[in-house]
Image 1: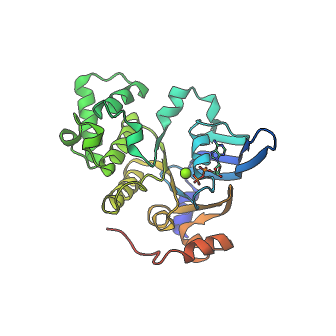
Image 2: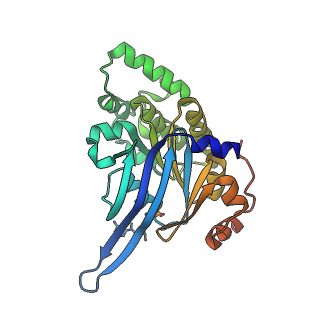
Image 3: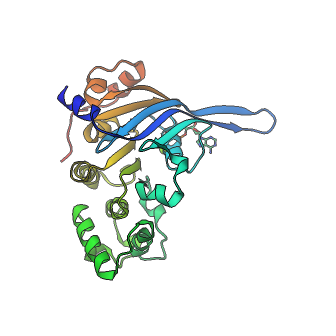
Length: 270
Ligand SMILES: Nc1ncnc2c1ncn2[C@@H]1O[C@H](COP(=O)(O)OP(=O)(O)O)[C@@H](O)[C@H]1O
Ligand SMILES: [Mg+2]
């Protein structure tokens, strides 16, 4: 109850209202599918919200619309109360960054990983000199549990998936983003480093007030990392609420089905 009150008073960072995306395929006999149907939810400051559902349920479609990679068919998305399309792209991506399933896809294999960090400076408003940048890198890397001297100067193939995801999360911090869209960020990294990435998100939420949309098909991870969860099925958010309520007293049959498939939901990862 206390927790609920705490999140209720927080300011809304992102709001999606009646978000719908339809895809039409086929030339003669056209078929329309609704990848997202009237999705309505918000994310508050310093809150991790999970979007959970099986593969093909429309999770990435929601992520792509928020990231302005695809246009919604209808509905609105606002960031800090303003339509996301009213922001210039540079201004928008300063505030909203993403981490995807495959961290290697964000890097050019022929460049050292520094390249991705170097390009991040261009999104910041301030114009830091070399020494100031060094300082920001030191402190940012410290907060994401990476030693700059161990990762900088290396090529993507020389780093582990977990290190790469940390680096991308670090990049969004360096830009100063307030919202991170994390689309299955742990599904391609091994189980032993997975908990590290989840714990990193938890500490950034706590220390820096970062807001995260954490997309997963793994309900156990949703339970571990978030306070609120949205359950998605065939393009629709069929149930949403606090993790406690949704996972202990699921209302929708699909949520019950998902929970039944998890052997030990309350197992924590160390
Ligand atoms: N570009 C596209 N054209 C047609 N259908 C698409 C396209 N992208 C996604 N879809 C369909 O939309 C549905 C939702 O996909 P997606 O959002 O990727 O689901 P999830 O991320 O939950 O696995 C799926 O049925 C998928 O096949
Ligand atoms: Mg997806």
